[in-house]
Image (cartoon, rainbow over all chains, first blue to last red; front, side, top):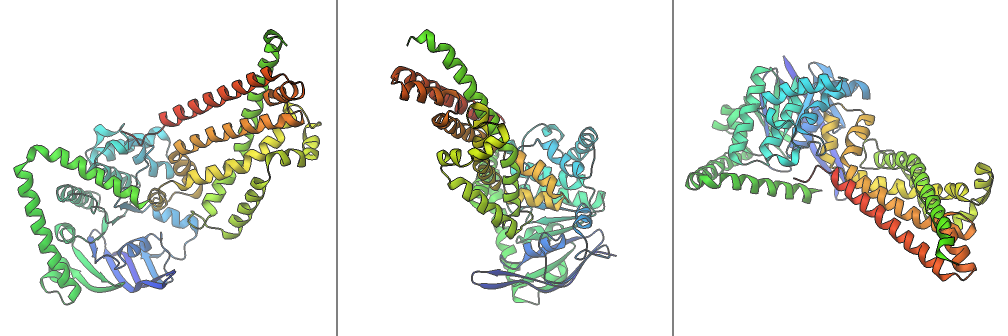
Length: 286
Length: 220
């Protein structure tokens, strides 16, 4: 059964330079238990697409069904309840910076109406799942990017979701950390039977864990199908271009690996540096 | 006039000033905090945009803020009389001080809450958080450092206003400075009250910064 079905979804942004048609008649479905990837070059409408699934963005037309239920017609209250079924993780992690790691994971449990004590007990279990129980009392700023994303995954799990949406969840992380996070997502997918939608511009993410993929180009689904099928026999220009990107990514990984072997002792420094870069980027984005 | 003679007077004045400032700032937050929250959430980028409500609040706040405090003081005297029973003295001064503080506080709260990362709010929305939850558990706690800096600024500004109220017999240190220092040419008294006001401002500022720094978890 399909957990997510999009049918003829359209979304337009009206801006100063005229309207931007971000999604044009997008139709796709995500099957229960699968890891579904959406890839595209920047500006293809990926983020808009994923935000339409939990209605953080409201499309003008089309149907969005979650486990068979049309969600565009839900009331505010019903939608909030439905959103507890659909967790989301983000490129910039989006943790509450003034809360401890444990209390961040507690947040969805508080929303669900649990008492603080019970919430903390449950949250600790999820922190164990992501391997960060020893950081429970730390604050997000004290963690590396990869660790912050693990906390975000624990927070997502705490709302007992049926679906997890990942919006460029590994784009701010280095290749090794990306790999670890993807492994964790796969574990979550298998152990909790959570369907996952991954939005990314990185081919390595798609090839690493996705079962099926949709290639988004200028707001339209250019190709859709099992990952191997789409990329062994690409029918569109954009899919071929993405294949080229994969090759350059692979090369890049090889170089980084060689470098890391040459200076293993500096890995720690490298990690903290890249974290600072991420933080700098976040500030700039603000 | 000997220093020993005015000591009790200055002591009383300091207590009166602090009482006025603290009470009116507290009352100011009672009005200004909800207003600031409303401004934030009803704005175009807010969690529940409401252009008409935003524009009305925006206008009211701009109007009240553009009236100079000295004029406001006199303008609302009838209202003060109605509420307190008289238009002079420390208790009466709390009314205009609160009226002046509220819109200022609303603006500062608004600017603090707007600093909260859009992504964090979106994360809360994606978890199914209600507007109330987002305000109480995301916006206010995440902006707490900035909000506390705002409290410090508000206290400082109201301290200044409270001294101004001395001109119409508002009580407190400003009143003493005007009655003794200005009307009776006792420059010494004037200087002492000014020194006390400066010290109060310093202490408020230092305390405010200390507390807002202490509660900030964004630093390693």
